[in-house]
Image (cartoon, rainbow, N blue to C red; front, side, top):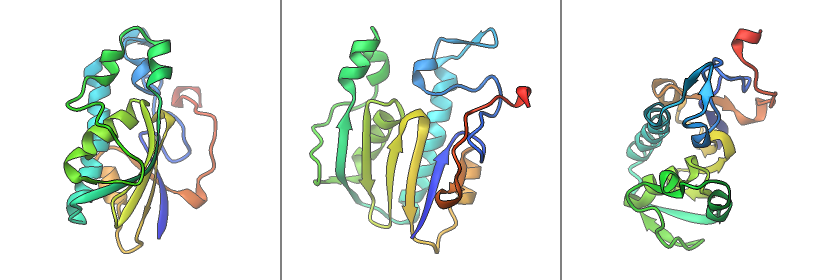
Length: 176
């Protein structure tokens, strides 16, 4: 198995530009004098969903197991007034049970909850598994016969060999 870190950042963890942002909580914030729009955020969220959808299709996944998850709704609701903004997805609060199998039909909503930092989780898709982290990072383990770098690049994402990743403080390219 190979292990990777998938993110919207470049290989050393730096933000791609000063127009970059960390997560959905940045929507509406001024970045270089211009507010990040919901559409800009959703475009990046879709990059992740497209990437995982292609993997699911490639491996013909029909179900997944959720070995564990952590519900962050209380944290979000205690910090932000408009919780509906974060949870406005098709089926946001399916009653997930750790260790249970689910139809592949539920994966997108679960992934959106992870991208919006409402859930931390591990999803086992059989041929690969995924763990989400804050700030739109995903840890992926997958068999070594599949080169998923092409899928990541196609979806404007960066895939780094997890064993070679050295975390750094994010910096703006303009500052370099």
